[in-house]
Length: 414
Image: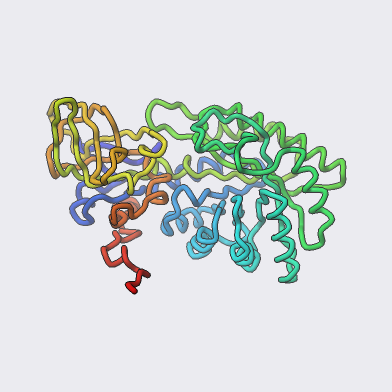
């Protein structure tokens, strides 16, 4: 569900016409709907309301401060994977006690900053990381709250680049490794063992891998309890998919039901880490047609957004629905929608049937609120796009478009 809809053949975001924003802001820009973010977050909150829980939003999916601040006000926590995301979450008003720190490569400085902030817990992903956290906590005269990320070797049936729960992936510890690590950590006075974590991948559209993973985690929790190690938190990760094209992903309530049933006899606080399913359909990328071009074999619409703005089509061959901002009584053209970057891989869509368009007209790349701006770059020395948020009948630029001066900030000529 989202709040991008046509009114009299013109695309609106909530109560604001997209064309009006484009006139004032210019293109390309990311456009977010506060109402959609709120609806999607509340769907998770309501799905898990029957037991103590924390919805720790995956910051990597969309880390704009306005987005994080909106979610903080709704009660969200944060799942972070870097010191920069820790900084953003705290700046946006997410309390440290609602922050979970994941990721395989936490640096000493990042661990120190997280301990100083007083985060809820670290999701530890290797024995080496455990040693470093223990060492730093001891030097700081603190006790680090930790959870181990367990890799249950469950196939999430998603794109291989966003699969994280198989034994061949870099994430987490095997079940046996994790058991040994728990025994070791439980004897370390600088550590407080509080939880267990599992995240098997992203853009999952089937409930069964989640249930399989949880069943395996539950077995390990019971095994740990037999050794006297009692946990307070179970983190089931995120990964629920969204509809980009013709997918039929489950709703948060469908996702929650088997998990809650399996936890009926368990007292633990549940942590869930949704990202894409909150932010994905809450944002679009708006771009202008620069040129139309026809060759002997192809027709192209060259637009002012490119792979540096939205990497997913080039990186994952991902599908994004692309719609005209203004529907007009014209024919349909089958075209490649491409950007200005000097790469053949610079495309937003290939062989896509769209309304015939002319230079200066606008396109909306749908479902771009997750892994859109956060994965953007300055490739070809292109300033990154503006970000705009709509709340009801008003809009605000929540990240200014970069300038050429921004591109060279911090650079020096010898």
